[in-house]
Image 1 (cartoon, rainbow, N blue to C red):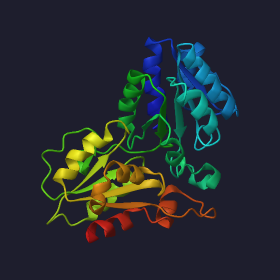
Image 2: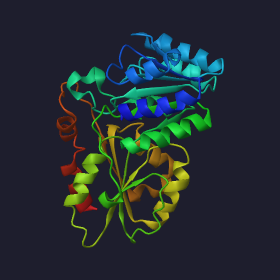
Image 3: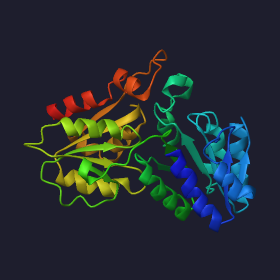
Image 4: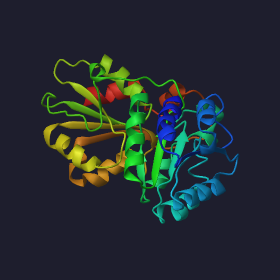
Amino acid sequence: MRKEFAAELLKYALDNPLIQLVVGDLGYGVFEEFQQAVPLQYENFGVTEQSSVSVVAGMAKKGLRPFYYSIGNFPTLRALEQIRNDVCYMQLPATIVSVGVGFGYGTAGYSHHLIEDLSSLSSMDIDVYMPSMPNEVSMCLYEIIRRERPAYLRLGKGGEKNFSKEDGVYSYREDLSQCKPNTLVILVNGPVVEEAVKARKLFDKKFRDVIIVSCWSSNNLSEYLSDLLRAEAKFLVVEEHVTRGGFGSWIDEIFPKNAEKVEKLSIEKVNRDFTGSSGYLRKKYQIDSEVILKTLQRL
């Protein structure tokens, strides 16, 4: 997703000199084209996450449209106070971009695992965008630039696949009126969608169909899902995030009277000793395709 982000943001930057990209000691092999095409709209501030967020807030205060991009928890948890005070409370159109969500940087150890960020940021007045597939990055950027509000964009590290309706995957806001009655609906965001797709392929759909909805935006989520809840029987929320304050918690808050319709798979307890690839960590934390399949069969 990071390459799609770089390419899409460059399209906007070529037409709009107010777009600014600020990175934190990274971006090599990703942003060279951006830097060469619009050098006055690119800055590398190094390892200064807290002050960088304050600077991009100042940029936004002056009328610019800054995007601050860095790895994992560094532009979020490390700079949480600056996001709260300088961006959210000031209601400035600055965007925090975090790459490697979930276990994207799983082999780097728990310092790089981005699995508590929604818990921290969802309580603030900031729009959250969580693409599951590369082709959703452009939709997220369109909404971010159009709305002119504080925004947080969560990106996969790279190598994610695009899925379609043939895989049973629907992007948030797509029309689901043609779905069969009693469909099992998997609600997901982020690269963990691939685990849901694997599980769906193995599921016996003789009696029930399974669809996967990628919920890439937090905006108008309740309005969209309310129609689904009225029409469908069971939901399964799958997220590469801790349980408390995560996406499943949002669903509980939006629809407190529909708790019996919603099952959740998330990270219940973090273990600092778990280090490895995304696939290895999803298996260890019981959010992989095998567990999803067993949950679907039980439902």
